[in-house]
Length: 397
Image (cartoon, rainbow, N blue to C red; front, side, top):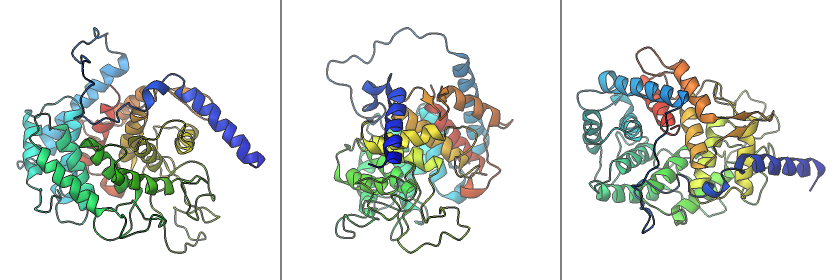
């Protein structure tokens, strides 16, 4: 090991020791079990300690969540129960999931109407989608939504058919050899390049329907996720692994020759792929869902990158582009990993929940919604940005 890598490895160990000191016992299980999995036999889930008075941050969180929900219920939802119809059923699924995760029951009129509308997108092939252009993404977010609403088992058959549908979209044996960079990945739907975002949505959807981390589909997906990490390791055998080597993640794996001299924001001067915030949090969350622990070098490297680029003011590496998607992946990954506090590169400790609540309170519009002036990835749509914001806030309680 050369001196530079030896120093980085030692520093990585130090950062991880600080980060997980108080939470390591919970790391492997926090938020990995789906909402449908039961407590061990004999464990009483009814005995709860007396609730203490909410903190100032929690009071603020509840206030902005309620304002956000009222926007969706009163201004965002159509008479048909959908949200942002021109975008297909994906926004409807995200909006209803955000409502349920923030305490609204399936009997709430907004939730009930949204679920009924979403059922109308179920296809004979098991998918849950609109025009078919982004059927993996739409089916996966719908699966998570229906899983959240499935306490009575009403949607169990629908979910199992959807599981088979998205699993069949994955690049697996027969289509791609395990040595192929695209192996285990999935894209928006059908033939075409896979990407980390869609693959992560699939992993989360599979976990939501009680699929074990050891399931072959999830382990295939982990192979693809690992190849989307800027880490020179046995798990990334692509040409990009050692060019940046900062532990962060990128969106897709090019299979054609790239020209780093272009103005393409994806590339570094040496032909590497730039890491950025939303993808790194997506990668971390996906690795935890796939069963990795804090001792795994991939997890260590991802957490180090997150500490070095900690912020709630922008999507690191992308600025305002995809900002609300970033907030969602930020909160979901840190909650899933069981991380309570996070030290940045200057050694300053952050309560990420309080930081995120305060930032989202600052950004909330007067009508209760959120929106992004940067129109990339449709985040100027208030329903989409509000749904992502509410999903992020559901992890901050």
